[in-house]
Amino acid sequence: MIDRKNLIVGWEAVSVLILILVLLSAVPLSSAQETGNLTIKAGTISSFDPMNLFKYRPWNALNYIGFTHVGLVRYDEHLNVLPCLAKDWKISDDGKSITFNLVEDAKWHDGKPVTADDVKFTFDYNKKHDLSIAYLYKNYYDHVEAKDDHTVALYATEPIGATLLRSLVGAYIIPRHIWENVADPEKYDGKDGMVGCGPFVFQRYDPVAAEAKFVANPDFFLGEPSIDAVNYKYYRTMDSMLLALKKGEIDTTFDYYMPVPGVYAATLADASDINLGAVPDVGVLLNLEFGYKRFLEMMNESQFKRFREAVSYAIDYQEIVDMISAGYGEIPGRGYVPPTAQGYNPDIPKLEHNITRANQILDEIGFIDTNNDGVRNLLDGSELSFSVTPPIWKQDNVRATEVICNQLSDAGMNAYVDKEVMSNEDRCDQRIFKDRDYYICIYYSTPSSVQYDGGGVNCANMTGSDGTCSDPELIKLVEDVRYSKTLEARSKAVKALQEYYSDELPMIALDWARVLFPYRTDRFENWTIQDGYGNMNMNTWFSLE
Image (cartoon, rainbow, N blue to C red):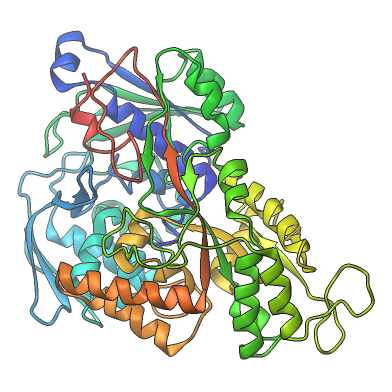
């Protein structure tokens, strides 16, 4: 959940997640008991293959919010941390460890008890195999100690206690007795690989119909869900999935932090018995991240700083809001962090579209169109030409990439869509997360990412981040946020980080959106709407009626 890769998330994985949430939110406990056989039908555009718990799309992402598996803690509707497998905890005075006391009645779906040894195994196994269960902790991992059957302590290399606690929301626990003999977890597809201790139990998967069914866990330690089953249906396109929603063939859609694009709002609003599920975003749905490594091969640091400023003026933010979000958003501020986030600084000015100023800055640093072909030249005579890379699993980001390229061309920059990744998701993943060799990436910050370090995970080249900026000042500011021990200290650190964002522009928010998570209202009501993530969440599973 909080890690960017996790969070970060694939297009297909996100759909499944929304689908899950739908199911969970569909029926109230009393209604479920009285009526019986209450099934939420959820649609997703994330492929179900392979049936592997550690592949991000889709089964990994489903468990960020707790489905077949759950973590030590969970979120309430306002993203506050609540107990889950851990009934309470204590962060050490130095911030380098957290001791958790586990509930004593949790059981795996096969009937075996959940113990502290399973928790220790999960994080050790995650580190050993470089999995994405706990992205932040994997990077600050020191060791884990099972003190007794129901007490476990996580030790970190740095004082990240409060931030680590929040990041563990998406760190689902796995059973040691199943995984300890699996040498290659990302290739394992045994049915017992879906055994967890969460509120739903995997029942079957039909690859021909592209449907998966999960049934409620009557022994779930937090109580039996209000609904009896969740059925997931895979759709190849967003259009076909939303048509199914309008026809009542599914109750909702879901993808982890991949809301329905705003361009579909009008047609959904005209349909009967559908709520758009529009909520203010706590994350940043669209951003522009600069690839420092590639640009610093093209220009010096002084030129690059002014280049980033020119890019910020060349972007027409209102056009992004209108074309990509269909008006469900607003022009963002230079400080990146949205108004919904803790520590937001309202005094930082909004971003401004000023193509005249963009051209002026580029002229001043000597990037002139020397041969009058419409493209500016660098000081060595080569063209100011670069690719723009989107995460191809997110439809809005791909569309935004095309718009951004057109806008930058108005200032004489030859920006073009990165064709090398457009038909290869693995190559795209490699470029963005592992090699980080992009010039510009049109990405996003999940609500959890903004919550735990003000978006530093996206732009800083440091432990626990996927960014490319190695500026010691930025790294220190992000560490101040991560290491803060009180809400007051954290708010102060986030405000200082926003000042840096405003001055240096290592990344730029493109839209502060209202995100859409539509659902039908004719079968279920009393959905619990979670900030930034919508109607599909663990709280909904017990509130619907």
